[in-house]
Image (tube, rainbow, N blue to C red; front, side, top):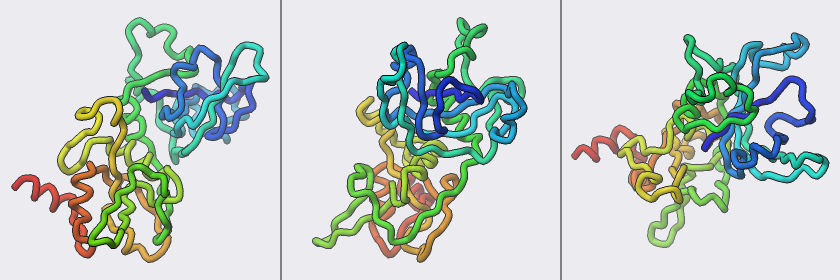
Length: 261
């Protein structure tokens, strides 16, 4: 379950945004390793903090994931803290409310106290709705850079003993591009509609390949990649077919035409 984490302008904890996040023990069940989080700030109370915020109104301003969770040994209340990774700062604030409607779905029995919780579990639908409205910065990648050796989603193909790697998942220096692409395009294949979780269950939740629409081999140099226009999510089968001929990478449209036939 994705989670909203609130960052206050004034806090009892000296946290660094996108690095460490302290929280009371009552939120332990929500903040687990690999949890996707969206950062939130409430309405500004002290104008002195205006320059450090994207908006003075309640808004979402970044996304990340929880790497690890630890007991805060300095706390006498049993508090915890999370190590955050893959933080992406939105270029513009995403308002908490648009045209009178909140982006978070508020349960009918929580209308009077929902916003009191500094950590809030949300549905995948609400999560993707917020990310879709975010202006995500482009990330630069360098041609010729190796993929992570331990990446379980990196696509590899062997042809007559000559091993060739197609870096369709994490060719970038960090995990940001993959995270952005999935947040924008979702985890269903954009060619055939296949969804790993629906077929294999919870074990395969979130599993998907991320494909570069323009082959990385054509870059020649460092290039800024826009996850909304330059990347797409594909299942393993469709990704393999697109790269079947390394000298003639198919387009997603061509693949869709094949599927129609």
